[in-house]
Image (tube, rainbow, N blue to C red; front, side, top):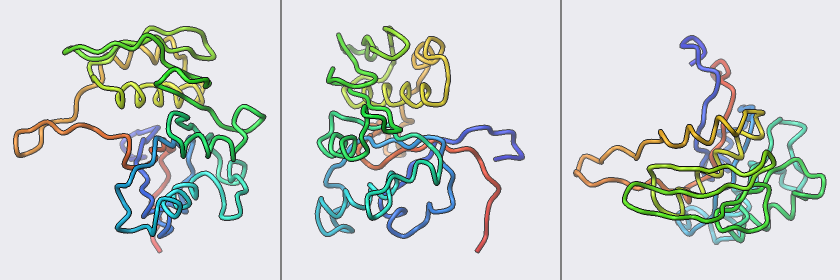
Length: 204
C-alpha cells in the first residue's frame, strides 16, 4: 500500500481480531463504534462479553482509554445503547478525546435532521461543529444515513473540510451485486471501522 502511494486506509476490525490480538500493532488515526448486535454470540459468551471485546479497541481492560498511547480519536454512535454507554465511559463531551454522532437526531457532535428516503437514495441535514450541511447519498436506509454521518465525523476528526466531504458522499456507490445476482446491503452492525495510516508490514 505504501509503495502504491496510499495515504489512508479504512478497515473493519472485528471483535474476534481484538480478542485474538490481531490488531495490536496497528496505529489508528480514528476508531469508529457503529453498533452492537447479536451477530457473533457463537464466539462470545453473551452481549456483555461481546461489548467488552469491542471496547478493547477504545480502552484497556481496566477501562483506561488508550488514546494517548495508540493515537486516534474515538468516533461513537450514540443511537446504539452500547455506543451511548461507551461514550459515557470515555467521557465524550466532558473533555474526553472522542466525537459522537446520531442519525436519529439525538444530541451529539454530528446529528441528522429532516431525513428523507426515496428510490434514488437518502437526503438529510447534518448538524456539525462546522455548521449545517445538506447531504445526499445514493444509498437509502437509516443504516446508510448513520454510516454517512460516521464518515463525516471521521473526516472532521482528521481535520478535513466538511464542506468538501459532504458533497463527496453523493458519489458513494452501492455494494456490488453478489454472485447470486442479489444486491448485498452493507451493514454497520458487523464491527467497528477504523481509518489507519498505512504502515510497513510486519512479520512475527
